[in-house]
Image (cartoon, rainbow, N blue to C red; front, side):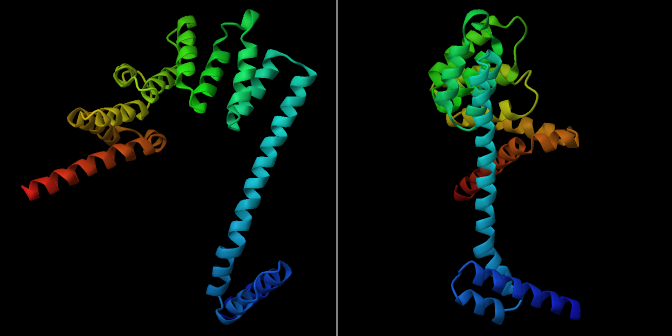
Length: 251
């Protein structure tokens, strides 16, 4: 107990000094002094924690900007397609989609005019910008030049572009086809949510039930990786059962 009391006094002194040094309102000093322990906690949550979060975000943004500046310098020094692609990827990650698109389009030239990696990056930039029509155009071009099965991640991106642009039947067909090969529950979950949006609740429930059935036999690492989609499926089924119960009671 003496040790805890001493620690409490030390914390009070530290927070009082912090409040004075940073010019906080004087009432914080009295809260810290007259409410030992809880006063320090309240002061930390209200005054220190937000400041720490702001500093963390600023440091993260500063590092990201420094990375972009470095890549911009690299591109200026050596304007190769590889450097252009690296900078375009950094722009996409920073939400600077128009700049990324300009770099990707410039890269689609000569021997790189049908480069799958550039088309993939360009499609992502258009998609996350919200330009779904151009995303679909370049995803279709990407699919045409694939000599193998392709990449299920970009097949999914195309299905999502269909849905976002209002081609719901085409999106649903794409989800249904992709669900047979896609590793994970995201496609099935999106398929179920789209069926629900279209008013096909029974079919949606079957899809969500399939997800929950796979949960029973899946290994732990799979469940951890797919927990968000499984959670959505469970909440949809719970919501439906709740509504059915209320309707039955009302009847």
